[in-house]
Amino acid sequence: MAAPANAHLGTWKTNEAKSKMAPGMGKTSTVVYAEKKDMIQVTVDGTDKDGKKTHGVWTGKTDGKSYKLKGNLAWDMMAYKMVNDHTYDITAMKSGKMAWSGRSTVSKDGKMRTLNMSGTGADGKKFKAKSVYDKA
Image 1 (cartoon, rainbow, N blue to C red):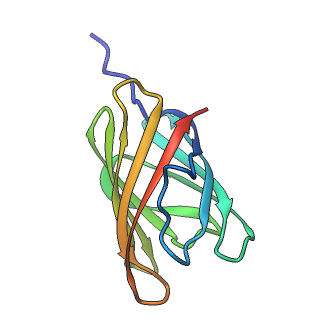
Image 2 (cartoon, rainbow, N blue to C red):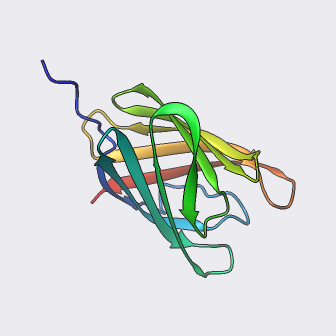
Protein backbone atom coordinates (compact mmCIF):
# COMPACT_ATOMS: atom_id res chain seq x y z
CA MET A 1 0.00 0.00 0.00
CA ALA A 2 1.38 3.45 -0.91
CA ALA A 3 2.11 6.09 1.72
CA PRO A 4 -0.59 8.78 1.98
CA ALA A 5 -0.03 11.81 -0.23
CA ASN A 6 1.33 14.95 1.43
CA ALA A 7 -1.61 17.38 1.50
CA HIS A 8 0.77 20.38 1.56
CA LEU A 9 2.16 19.72 -1.94
CA GLY A 10 1.21 22.31 -4.54
CA THR A 11 0.83 26.08 -4.79
CA TRP A 12 -0.87 28.13 -2.07
CA LYS A 13 -2.02 31.78 -2.38
CA THR A 14 -2.51 33.95 0.70
CA ASN A 15 -6.10 34.81 1.55
CA GLU A 16 -5.52 38.22 3.17
CA ALA A 17 -9.18 38.59 4.18
CA LYS A 18 -8.93 35.52 6.43
CA SER A 19 -5.34 36.12 7.62
CA LYS A 20 -4.21 38.10 10.66
CA MET A 21 -0.63 39.21 10.08
CA ALA A 22 1.70 40.27 12.87
CA PRO A 23 2.41 44.03 13.00
CA GLY A 24 5.70 44.91 11.30
CA MET A 25 6.01 41.58 9.50
CA GLY A 26 6.02 41.24 5.76
CA LYS A 27 3.36 39.50 3.72
CA THR A 28 3.62 36.18 1.96
CA SER A 29 1.77 36.02 -1.34
CA THR A 30 2.62 32.51 -2.59
CA VAL A 31 4.03 29.33 -1.04
CA VAL A 32 4.89 26.31 -3.19
CA TYR A 33 5.55 22.87 -1.67
CA ALA A 34 7.29 20.33 -3.94
CA GLU A 35 8.88 16.91 -3.43
CA LYS A 36 12.64 16.71 -4.08
CA LYS A 37 13.64 13.03 -3.78
CA ASP A 38 13.43 12.25 -0.03
CA MET A 39 13.03 15.93 0.91
CA ILE A 40 10.54 18.73 0.40
CA GLN A 41 11.23 22.13 -1.10
CA VAL A 42 9.29 25.16 0.08
CA THR A 43 9.44 28.33 -2.03
CA VAL A 44 8.07 31.50 -0.43
CA ASP A 45 7.40 34.75 -2.30
CA GLY A 46 6.02 37.97 -0.85
CA THR A 47 7.01 41.43 0.37
CA ASP A 48 8.83 42.62 3.47
CA LYS A 49 7.48 45.24 5.89
CA ASP A 50 8.82 47.99 3.56
CA GLY A 51 7.12 46.56 0.46
CA LYS A 52 10.30 45.12 -1.09
CA LYS A 53 9.98 41.74 -2.81
CA THR A 54 11.10 38.70 -0.82
CA HIS A 55 11.97 35.23 -2.08
CA GLY A 56 13.19 32.22 -0.15
CA VAL A 57 13.76 28.54 -0.89
CA TRP A 58 14.06 25.90 1.83
CA THR A 59 14.90 22.28 1.06
CA GLY A 60 15.02 19.73 3.85
CA LYS A 61 13.58 16.67 5.48
CA THR A 62 10.55 16.73 7.74
CA ASP A 63 12.59 15.30 10.63
CA GLY A 64 12.50 18.33 12.94
CA LYS A 65 16.15 19.23 12.20
CA SER A 66 17.17 22.69 10.94
CA TYR A 67 18.12 23.17 7.29
CA LYS A 68 19.43 26.36 5.68
CA LEU A 69 17.14 28.66 3.77
CA LYS A 70 18.36 30.53 0.68
CA GLY A 71 17.00 33.97 -0.15
CA ASN A 72 16.15 37.25 1.55
CA LEU A 73 13.53 36.27 4.13
CA ALA A 74 13.70 37.46 7.75
CA TRP A 75 15.01 34.03 8.87
CA ASP A 76 17.86 31.84 7.59
CA MET A 77 17.04 28.31 8.79
CA MET A 78 13.88 26.25 9.18
CA ALA A 79 12.89 22.96 10.72
CA TYR A 80 9.79 21.04 9.63
CA LYS A 81 8.40 18.12 11.61
CA MET A 82 5.60 16.07 10.10
CA VAL A 83 2.76 15.53 12.58
CA ASN A 84 0.53 13.70 10.08
CA ASP A 85 -0.22 13.85 6.34
CA HIS A 86 -2.10 17.18 6.81
CA THR A 87 0.04 18.87 9.50
CA TYR A 88 3.59 20.20 10.01
CA ASP A 89 5.15 21.83 13.05
CA ILE A 90 7.54 24.53 11.79
CA THR A 91 10.35 26.46 13.49
CA ALA A 92 12.08 29.40 11.75
CA MET A 93 15.44 30.66 13.03
CA LYS A 94 17.67 33.66 12.45
CA SER A 95 21.37 33.44 13.42
CA GLY A 96 20.66 30.42 15.62
CA LYS A 97 17.77 32.00 17.56
CA MET A 98 14.12 31.13 17.11
CA ALA A 99 12.28 33.79 15.08
CA TRP A 100 8.90 32.05 15.14
CA SER A 101 7.26 28.67 15.43
CA GLY A 102 3.92 27.45 14.23
CA ARG A 103 1.68 24.71 12.96
CA SER A 104 0.62 24.42 9.32
CA THR A 105 -2.53 22.40 8.73
CA VAL A 106 -4.28 21.59 5.46
CA SER A 107 -8.07 21.24 5.59
CA LYS A 108 -9.61 17.78 5.10
CA ASP A 109 -10.83 18.77 1.61
CA GLY A 110 -7.30 19.96 0.67
CA LYS A 111 -8.45 23.43 -0.44
CA MET A 112 -7.20 25.57 2.48
CA ARG A 113 -4.03 25.73 4.56
CA THR A 114 -3.76 27.56 7.89
CA LEU A 115 -0.47 28.55 9.55
CA ASN A 116 -0.81 29.64 13.19
CA MET A 117 2.47 31.12 14.38
CA SER A 118 4.01 32.95 17.32
CA GLY A 119 7.43 34.39 17.98
CA THR A 120 9.44 37.51 18.71
CA GLY A 121 9.72 40.24 16.08
CA ALA A 122 12.84 42.21 15.15
CA ASP A 123 11.58 44.88 17.58
CA GLY A 124 11.77 42.36 20.46
CA LYS A 125 7.98 42.24 20.88
CA LYS A 126 6.13 38.94 21.03
CA PHE A 127 3.54 38.30 18.32
CA LYS A 128 0.89 35.85 17.20
CA ALA A 129 -0.23 35.61 13.57
CA LYS A 130 -2.48 33.49 11.40
CA SER A 131 -1.94 33.05 7.68
CA VAL A 132 -4.66 31.42 5.62
CA TYR A 133 -3.89 30.13 2.12
CA ASP A 134 -6.14 28.89 -0.68
CA LYS A 135 -4.97 26.09 -2.99
CA ALA A 136 -4.11 27.61 -6.37
